[in-house]
Amino acid sequence: MRAIRVHEHGGPDVLRMEHVPEPAAGPSGQIVIDVHAAGVNPVDTYIRSGAQGYSAKLPYTPGLDAAGIVAAVSPDVTSFIPGDRVYVTAALSGSYAAQTLCSVERVFHLPERISFEQGACLGIPYATAYRALFVRARALPGETVLVHGASGGVGLAAVQIARAAGLTVIGTAGSELGLELVRQHGAHMALDHGITGHLDQAVEFTGGKGVSIIIEMLANVNLGSDLPALSRGGRVVVIGSRGPVEITPRELMRRDASIHGMTLFNASPSELAMIHAAIYAGLAGGFYNPPVGRTLALDEAANAHRLIIESKAAGNIVLVP
Image 1 (cartoon, rainbow, N blue to C red):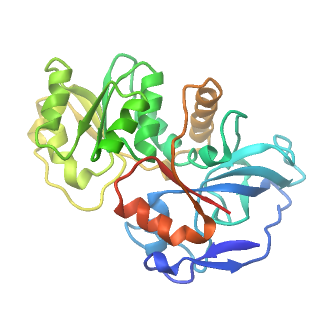
Image 2 (cartoon, one colour; image 1 turned 120 degrees about the vertical axis):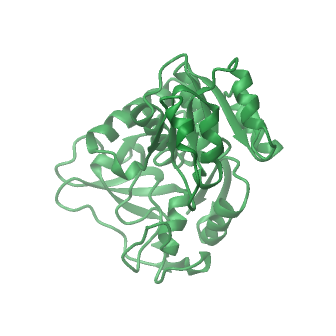
């Protein structure tokens, strides 16, 4: 089968199309998926380049998220059968391929109303957003959340999830296209984070109280400015950062505020089961609609990696084998 392979850490050009053997389900707890779409996430680029503390055993096929059809299951698997529509996360053999091997615990049913391209955007973006909001920040209906960098895959997921849960949502973006996406997906207010004073506008929107929660995608740029925008008891959840940052701790002290780090890789199996049960309910009920910003052919994986890091985010990027 066709698959993208990486033989050395480096830039996007190390992503090469090759032919490899098809995966087979083992004797216990595994599923083979015919991949109809593979999600592209920033973490894929970190693993490829060996950056931000990530790496992989070489050679490997990149990609954690995908959606498609169950092709085969281990004899002990009873929750899925060949032909089921599913989405997956943390694919064992990599998702940038015609087929991928997965543990049954990381495979989830995909509602009929959701396309495979949309399904490929669920594993990391929606689970990350849900965990940041409700596990780390312990968000409550009626609170105000500011999603910094809301036009990307995780950001738009956070906007939808927070809006559906009864929070007031402020989203920031760096382009008019991004701002319009943020509005379309449910934000009560959209702010250009390239404009000086945009956080002052957010505080003004809350009547001067400050925002309850900030979901932060680029802490090395924003964290120092985030803290004065928090309400008393406010929380920042750091999802992304690409370097060091200087903060003023007294801004936390005077508000009894807190900063929480978060990575989805720390979620326990039971926590993931809870998160994906909630995601399925939101999808089936029509509250969540994963936005696909760009669809590329599998052999354009290198271009997809450039786009997700270099361009202004506008939805998710998916690869179609």
